[in-house]
Image 1 (cartoon, rainbow, N blue to C red):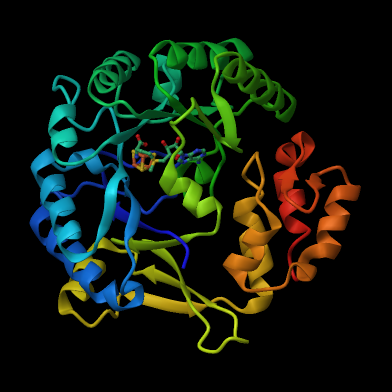
Image 2: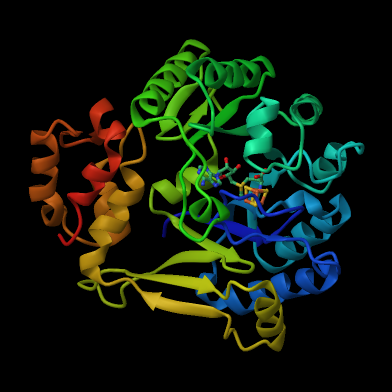
Length: 389
Ligand SMILES: C[S@@+](CC[C@H](N)C(=O)[O-])C[C@H]1O[C@@H](n2cnc3c(N)ncnc32)[C@H](O)[C@@H]1O
Ligand code: SF4
């Protein structure tokens, strides 16, 4: 059975950013009912246990939202509660996302407290180090605050990721390069670089800002990728760059179509049930938790697992689902992984593989399917070839 990772969703933020379509909400007056949410998470985990019986966790990711709206003590209780219910492999990666502004502009974030709670990898959402860009993005922190928080984090954690976005309102090529230069100067081992996209149901979708044109955004992407390569950060996924030993085990498992158990409001899971007979392939099941935090807490605490909605993934959807993830990986995947994770014969996708190679989007041989540089630039086109196989 493939590896299993644990994703824990904490849905609160200081304020909702206008570009964000994650299941995240401005912290309510009651502080998000931390005690009740914690009990709901642990109840949720218990209700999910039969689906992962006998398996051990190989990485943990506490995402959001903004997990550092909750205290280190709260995170400590959460991790202890999870460890008590589910076996963890020794020495695993435990990532927590964080926002530099969550503790208020004047306060320092207690990074050491989070490390003592068991977090050993931090992912800090910075987005930009340019004041006007942060204002345009509606961020709650200044550039100085972000810089200070990252400097302190690097002093406490060996493994730190920064999230940066480019293609921001009013951004020039020079400003995008300055943001990255600043990030590189802070000595982090991992960078996630995202083009700002306007997502439906966000404030920006209703009030669209003026963004740089496509040619300029493409120029930014090419220039930033080259800067990262020169700085010794390998691009291992379409948006992720890491120094040796700094790749994110949790996210790699996603991209390799491994199994993950998600707990928390709106969290997703992907779990494989082995076939019952030798000639029967595995069944892939997706589970989605109820999104609204209040409903999630009510339903998880009621103990009926009604908040976990299950859906079997039909065999004909599996090739696209696998490729949607695997083709994001710069080094590609061995074809044997397709058979292992989907239970389908490789022949199922050979016509699409052939088309992708012919279009110059994919390199394929018996040992590896790997997107070309062009394939990474036109990833949607490459992935679309695997629809309805
Ligand atoms: C859950 S947030 C990370 C942590 C924290 N909530 C924060 O924002 O500081 C995940 C990341 O997704 C990226 N992101 C969110 N919305 C985006 C959008 N519309 N376009 C591009 N990247 C986006 C941001 O870089 C963000 O840091
Ligand atoms: S802080 Fe992060 S999760 Fe929260 S709204 Fe902003 S981008 Fe989304």
